[in-house]
Length: 164
Image (cartoon, rainbow, N blue to C red; front, side):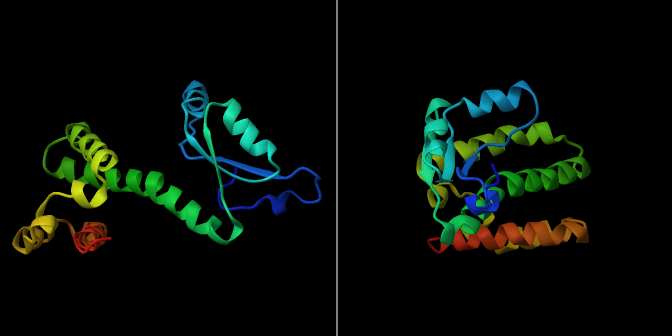
């Protein structure tokens, strides 16, 4: 189930396969439920991996060796980087006297918009408007150790405004 590794790491076993679910897997019932929720599985090697994905109710997508690291990087960004970004939201919310939960409906709606419209059309906010004064105001209000994360997000938003 290692997304970054190919089936060759299982040598010398005759039947080697990768079955990597594109869903976070916490321990216990929540992880089991997610495996059965119709997710996409990155597969490689022995065809049994695709069969297992189907039995679990998922969709199997073959991951070629030459794109495996990029595939896994995308999975890392989709899950881990989103969680890390929400960690920054929690820290900034606390400074502003709010809680992370106050911002989760905003994050959920943004993800829903991306699912419906794609990232470029879903982008809102100061970068999408070219409002660099607000970006500067944000930076001036943030603790210095939050600048890198904020500016990373600005750079990614700016890239979307330029078509990708």
